[in-house]
Length: 206
Image (cartoon, rainbow, N blue to C red; front, side, top):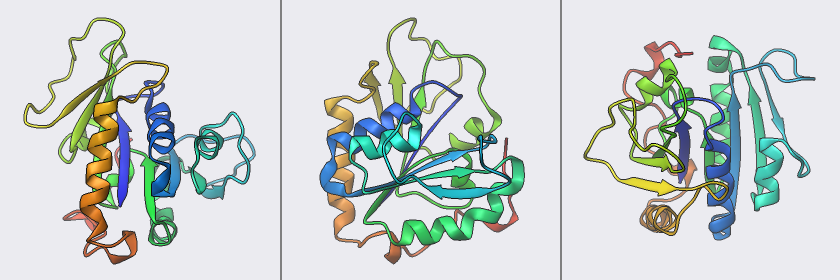
């Protein structure tokens, strides 16, 4: 199964949600992928780097949490499009994959799309607005005023979480149930469709 974890902005807990789900569901044997649209030190151009050891980076945190493999994808702007083929290969080889990204959903269709919302955070990215069309469930970060500034679809599950854990028993149970339901359909390599409708004609939002 492929799980995407997106969100409306930076530093709202997306990486903590990914790490929390990896830690709570070790039996999934997760392959974790962090997609960053910003240049990282020591990385030139668009690259995919496999994290080899735990450290303080997000991809390192995923190994610490128990991921079988972890990757950092660094690609500014439209450069991400050129890495989609390599990312598919990584996901094909995964038993289950968990990906931190909004924009990749324009090109690769997840089995489950979770979306983190922090009502205390600021403006929404363009890619966040696009992602709302395909989100399966919302993760709302508690800790302050709980009025969400951006209208969320009402007919999808919402799970409330608190830092520093950023996961809840209900959220873990929801993902575990989806993993079980997916088990009879095979892993990522057996997916019938990798691309959302019209993906080849899309440009990536910022």
